[in-house]
Length: 341
Image (tube, rainbow, N blue to C red; front, side, top):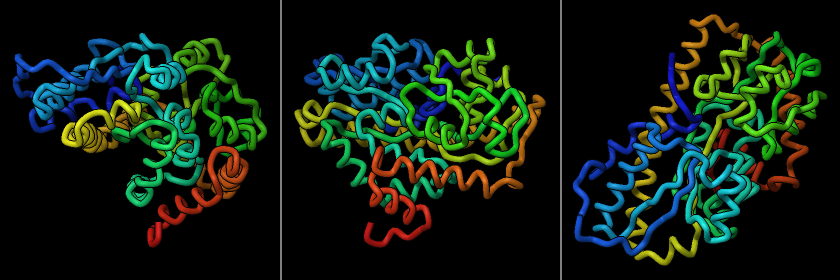
């Protein structure tokens, strides 16, 4: 059985060890001039936090001890909403979050999670490359700097009960994260009633049948042990789960340009290496679930109905979460038309 304690443990697991200087000896005589207080939901002692500490060693080596990361793990600072609030209040300096947390900082970034828009990795790569400056500006305008982006696999529908077309979800109890307006709207367009819970409450909800349907990647379903309560998994995905980390802008720019570059370089190298791992392990988790007997649901016979729901959801969220121009820019990037973006 794949044992992972947090959805994003696999995002950076082992990747920091690929960074230059990740295992270099720290300078004992260098007192840090900048301490970056970094909040994470990952448990202390987990593989993720071991990787973060390796990243910290690389960062300290690259800045000759001037900058270091100080981690507050295991949700000791609350959930993602608390992370954002505390960074804004100066109680934390940085955090690692999911799409939902990123959207709390820069609402329009939720366009990346719009259902049916980005479903393949090459589409995501083109979009991030073409619109990186635009997304960075969104965060800057709200007082933050993006350190890196991450992934946690392809987002698909899982359920305890059989389904094939959108209307089948009307009789089910689909979960929507309390702070996620995207999937909640998707479910509402279908005509079902989303059950709003925090992510840590989902497993208990599946046990009691408070919820019986969840959006997740295979990697996430295994990581959170949700798969033990689920019997059906969609073959087709409606999006890709993204995440990332950000830092308070003033503290970032208070560092020297050299140290800023080192921080961004080490963060992005880790993210790039972990991207390969996340994609590989999501595919492996999918195959593992198939071998364990979960029923794969091929929804292609009802593709038109699913596409219509996704399109209506994107339309409903336009003007509420993101602008029409941003949506159109992402659509162009997805299609490979990046001229002028």
